[in-house]
Length: 75
Image (cartoon, rainbow, N blue to C red; front, side):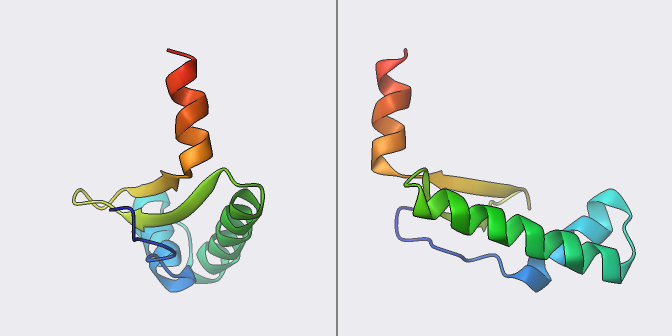
């Protein structure tokens, strides 16, 4: 899993939002662009290193190594 980066495209996320949230295509695409922009922001801040759809078709974030260390230290 650690090699997955940006495996869910704007189009993939828009389709997901249409299916799961019942959004119309145009609104789903606009929301998907916002989601991707947020993911890029989190990548730039070193919080995540990617995102993907898991086996159950849920959108997952791949935390960065530094984020995993912070999480581990809080346990």
